[in-house]
Length: 273
Image 1 (cartoon, rainbow, N blue to C red):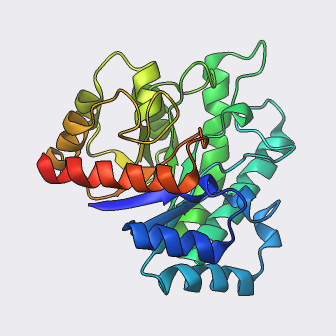
Image 2 (image 1 turned 30 degrees about the vertical axis):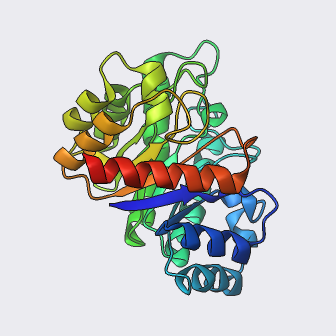
């Protein structure tokens, strides 16, 4: 199994130090938050992209993807009634796809709850139609670079648009692109679904392109109440062969401790199921 980690956990660490620790712990991949490096992807030069990739690869790491795609941006939105904003959003996602590919990655997780919320007075059907338009306008160019977008369901505490795996698949099927797939996140599934996580893993095993591990307490796996034995067992049984990526939101225990404890626990559980 390929274990990775989302690097925005390492606030204020320089890139070499991040890569040194991530590799030393035993992770094989890194998931980048673009805002941690520049205000927009076009601000990251070709030389910088090559340097970021080489630094990771020299330590045996792959930068496999991006997430928090629209975080800390202005004037971008997925479901807005403003056609010009939808066009800009699709163009921005293409820029991110170029960055992802240049860094050696092949997936982008679309979460960005604030940039997808449904406008007051807009119908659910219209919101889905607007989102589908954005994805149809960016996925072909992104696909030419070998990159997929993974649609992330989030809880109703975070957004009112796409809260369950079934709703994500509804949007994915509307778009009809081979490089538009489902993303599953443990914290989100704990807070939004009526079926158990192992049931959801098996139910959508042929549609899932990426998997985030964390807990409802916003810390990493093994640091909360969630038992990962049935979760990782289901991933193993379903022959999931993608990345299992640690994404946390509470950094208080310390970046290094969280990274080490999450990896230790995941490795221990994976080897026991």
